[in-house]
Image (cartoon, rainbow, N blue to C red; front, side, top):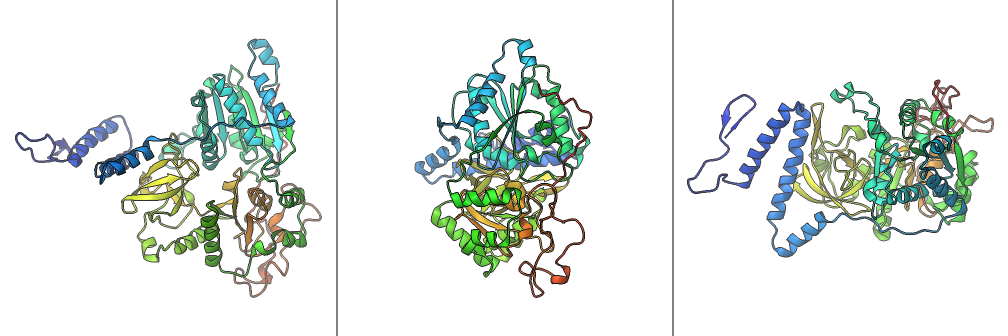
Length: 558
């Protein structure tokens, strides 16, 4: 028997003399859960977190029942191996360029001081600059691995959960891997989500006291407020951790205020990686170089994309073709959009291709509101999902990870998914926040260019889905530079020069208004030429300008 929230005594099951204490495994589970929930209530855990805890344990119990009900020993062994194994890539001893060796040498030197006075006089900050694909993040990971092997504690900081997943999935298996921690800057600074958690807005990370090396990836994406707090927290550490910032400031800038990180990096010891390794495709590399600092002529865009410019077919036809390419090549085909709305359009078309009906979609489970998707989740085997919360970092259930639905345990509510890349299995189950119950995921057939910054993609399609204005500065360059080859980079819809504006100040030669070939009076996307030319700021432009004022912060990088 248990006592419920109203103080009433409830009987869990009938007792049979000489029989088991509990009539079923479900009754035993209900009893243990009642004790655990009551204990958590006494500890002050609020209702929505208790509900999320209940959903997690319910999912674990359903997986337990699934294993108990295996048809035979062979099926049991298959499930055991799937869940007991955590897959990691093997370490490869790569050959590094002279510039990359310089980076590794500087980091090793900066982390090898025994004399505190010498350490205090040395450079404690390093800025690694370079174009996309120049190996900035890869050499940073190698530095982290070498430091971890020496027993140093390393923290890798990323602007998004998707990059956290990318680092975690690429970390090889080696002695000392437990010394490496990967987290978002929000996680490091102990930021809280909106709602009741928002009462604590920021608390200085005392955990940095235990960190010897800090690697900060994609420095161009940090807003001034976050960068200022993060930088101040590092400078306050008495043990002077060695800090590395990896950035290319010709890529997307943070939403809102930005420029402080760049101003700080300009004062740091700097190594520039000037050779691109992501691609051996010379035409692809030449096009990236052309659009990095200058807006390309329309003829250059037409020549580069050629028949990979999909403008004569419907969205459904193009998405279906992309998925056929993925099936044939056995590599994901990723759509990059400028807005969340465009990503939802692509995902809806992909669901129609895999046979998800409108009625099934209507009966699906609510996806994470934080993803801004309005598509409900249908747990059909083979459906591609993007996880949106950090619920099991050990297995790889982190924000941004891609997973394929493997098996449903309870309709669209609780199911098993297999992570792309690592092949690890994860349990997907509802959670509750601010009275809303939802799945911590959305569909993964498309993502925005901003979320994809830092990723390396085999193939996909770019879709500038904003209707009336140009994409933000840097969007075209970042989107193209995600792909490894020219053949793997497609574009859907209108081909506009205005979507390929470089990052930086406006130039006299920049074309900011759409021409006849970008919008026409019978264009089914827009309202006609009379509305094609914006008179105000670009609605999609979210890159902040540089700031000269450093806020009076101590920026001594020696």
